[in-house]
Amino acid sequence: MEQKDLPLAKACSFSGIRPAIVDLPYPPIQVREQNPAYANLLSIDYCGSVSELSAITQYINNENRLSAHGCALARALLGIAIAEMMHLQHLGELICLLGGQVDFVARMRNGNHRMWTPEYLTLPEQTNKMLQADIEAERAAIHQYEMHRRIIKDDCVDAVIRRIILDEEYHIMLLQNLLKNGGC
Image: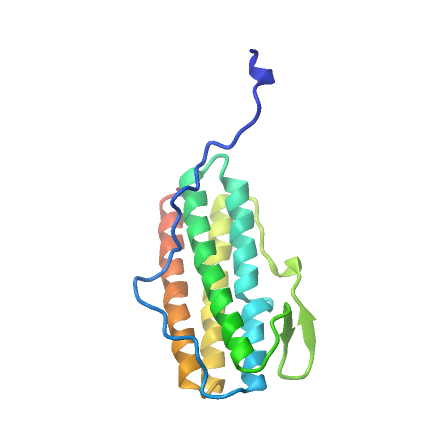
């Protein structure tokens, strides 16, 4: 069989990928009482421009584009994406417990609503710029979580947010290490 007759195949295996998370348990997903205002704040973290949904989508896109020539890097990004999926799921549960809706609409404090869009993503072509964009997105997420922590006066919600922030800080460390090592 000639070389041109061979099918193109991805050689990168994603078997055994684990979420890139800090080795600490998550606190119970619970709230002190329903509070739609808090649910609305968390909806921004869930699906706003700086959000878990944006992070997941950006990491998966980068992983797909890198897997053909950077398997180790693609595997690392997929591990981070899985962690972000866990965060999205935890936030969704908190939003529901707080009396909010999980529908990919970020509800702003000024009453505006904004549907999630891929326009929120930063998708550079160069690997180092991808990693730098991911680091900046993680920093922005931490900053936003910290702002929301100052507003939300529910210790149960705060505990979950603090735990998520630990993972986001860990992701920055991993991404900086990948960047320092030339993206591999």
